[in-house]
Image 1 (cartoon, helix red, strand yellow):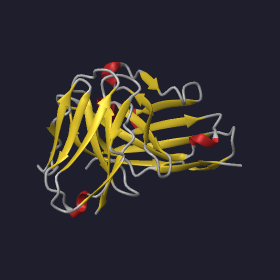
Image 2: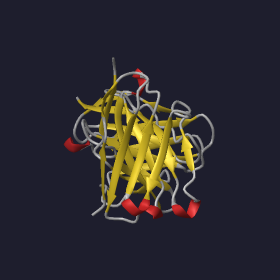
Image 3: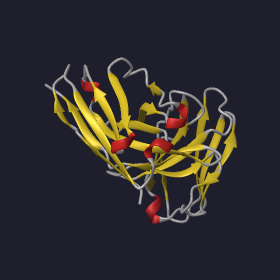
Image 4: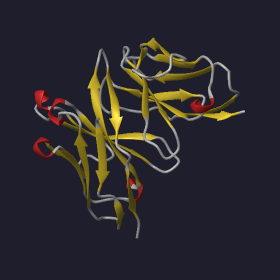
Length: 122
Length: 105
């Protein structure tokens, strides 16, 4: 059974740092692109970052809103996807989801974690 | 940019519901539809604009290509009251539409 479990969320002051982790199980992590997606309470979904799969050399993409502050990384040997968040702003407050991407004639996110809440506040 | 409309709608069980998603530039068929219920992660319904994800009821369908896309629910069921999002998958950033909240009339 495919499972994604996020952890690491919490309360942090503006300007601070936080590291989120996503533990993957039930599939081969290196075969899949992986994303972080966030959602402010009561608002819509925002794609944050992408780690491509091994076949695509683990290359990375970021949303403009987090580029230079957030770093996505993975350790396939530990079945783990991370998001290092630095220089946090109040507008980064959101639930953060990790999501697996699959392809079958089109790309889509077929499995999502339960989310972890990040609150940036003084 | 993806523009979803309407942002919300009220409908009754058994109604036919149509949600549209318009891209600011052509994205071929690289569009996904998700359903999200309160406190839950999104769930994929449709990918490649019109392909039904395994396990999703056939009352859900998607159509469109280029800039204009549609999600249709042919006979709304109680469990379909949720928020629906489109997402482009052709290039970065992988933008989501603003969402359409489907409420009980």
